Length: 169
Image (cartoon, rainbow, N blue to C red; front, side, top):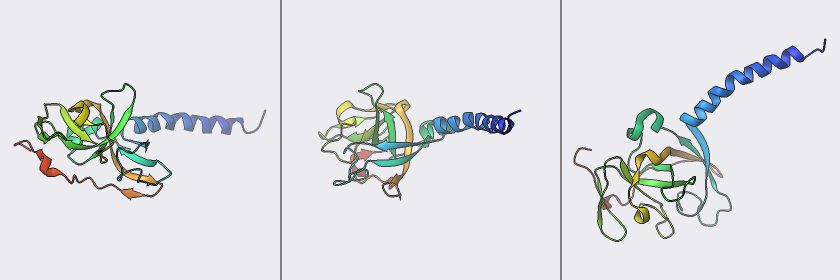
């Protein structure tokens, strides 16, 4: 008999028992990601930074649906224009709201949709280009950046005068 084999199988069995739980948590509760590009500067990837921000993402959609998100949240969502691409934007307006786009026109946000924008409006491709996006495209809410420095995120939106909230909010 080779000594140590039963211990190996015991550890392997423990790993195989924990692995599905870890995958379930990653897919449905929290995940880690990297924010690439300048569209969310200065919140992420400040000018002069040599590193992309690493973030912690909470996935409230699995538990709360669209009630898990609110105006000002920074969200990761599937790109409405490029299949398989994830983008990071700030949630500006929710269904039923009216928002003034960058051209100065009022846009009504239909049921089941939202309006998202990048913090760096000069380079961001966002709802000002592709219009309201379905809430179903939102995957997660970004709650903190943990690298290159740890910081909790400010989920306030500075241009609130551009949004007319729905009467029942």
